[in-house]
Length: 480
Image (tube, rainbow, N blue to C red; front, side):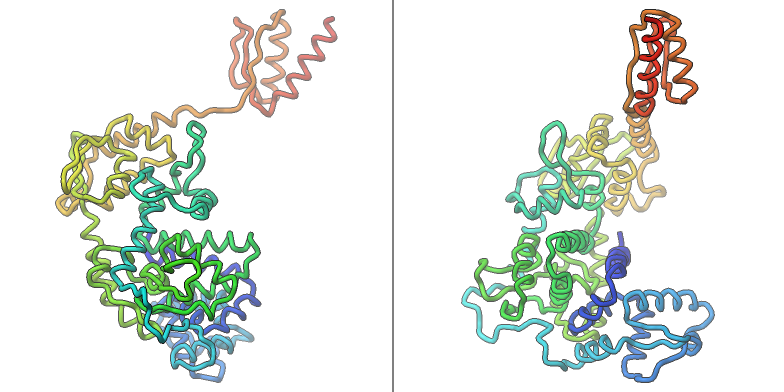
């Protein structure tokens, strides 16, 4: 899933909010800046063009700004701006929301009296931490969740709150056999995404849970958007946070989004998971840990300044992902020492050997069936191997051997050829005529699944059980 896709999920959530909620959200400059960053490029251009224009603009004038080929994109951008309550259309005239205009101007110029971008500590921290430490902390916390999902115990078990969220979001579910949480089809799809997408998936579910717990949704959203605008490596005071936001800190610590030395600490640090929430930059890759620059975003131009570095990070990340070699004899070689990637492979590969920077295994019918039993689909397995294929594999078309791909799909079809159906078995009829009458009645109702006249046995669908049962009872009563 691309960055644009996870932004769409945020759009979909924001579009469900009432106008009154948007008016409260727009009162925070940091929230206005965050929403601006999530807009499509044409939408951002419209906002910047209208920001200092007090007079309304007609729809026809706006269309004149774009050539014929761009009219469709223009309409889509205006629709998104309208759904986010940034633009209001009245009588073919477009008006920029006055609250959004004022607070977004404050975000760009540093105006306003609100400490919307957090309150940095003026005194040094006796227990100060640096950016590498924050990156290590965020990686440890986040990978603890991912390791738990794939069933490895290399790290500590996630908190009860994280486990509740995993189950609530259906990334994991209770296994009928073991009674323990196990990964689902949705959970495996979750593992295929980049870290930014995964974090937003968690936070969107957290927002839904916050509503159930009757937390102030505006305060929750404001804090998440504020975190996306803070400076990596800087410590911030909890004094400006509301009670709801202080409560959020404990949950966000579990996810690795913020670091706080202990629960009663008066300062907290945003990690790279927080500062990349609305920037679109990659998070927690080896490249970003070594060369990534902190996002000192107190203005919209800071996000634009990082675009070239974000592109380089994305390219490097794509190269790092290529570690899988698959042969036509079903042998798989993975050039990785990542415990997480090895655990993911173990979901559908029978691993045989492990070396310092490589593991080997083979794809078998049993290994694929084990994955299918967890709800993982053949297409997800194929997509994973394609997206992580080694550079040498990418030189071929198709990337993966067709014989292996076809066999994986056949194994899935083999498992899905039989589907259980709730039904009732009728047998031991004493008189053939009673069986024949019941069989005909079931056929007429369209609830007969199977029958054998010689054995006087038939199987009915669950929906037809009550009707046929009543019919048989009435017939037996008449014969007695």
